Image (cartoon, rainbow, N blue to C red; front, side, top):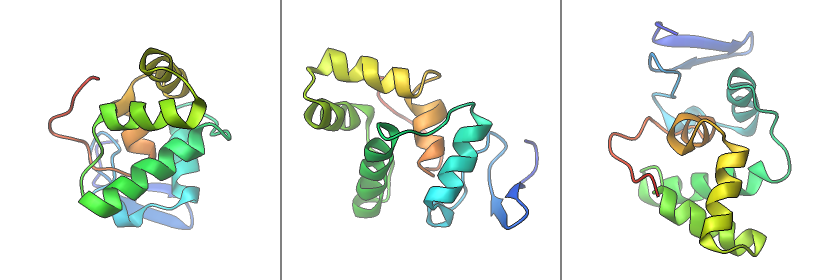
Length: 117
């Protein structure tokens, strides 16, 4: 992925950085999310979507990727888990990590600094 523009399919041509993150999060939609997830080897299921939608809502409000701690808190509340269980579920959903997969699939730009939670 060393091109500034990567084709997700014939109908989508979206500018992405060399690591595959969107340059402009406004290019994101759920079809793009599915295509990004497929590139990561993830088939999005019903547990993924609330997380991705929460991340998008937070981005819309703040114009920055939400910190993993906020996402863990959301997952804990959504799933009725403690923080340890929520963090484990988050990493089960996105096994290569919050930044590497969740942020990318949610259409975020790669965070420059983040908490590992």
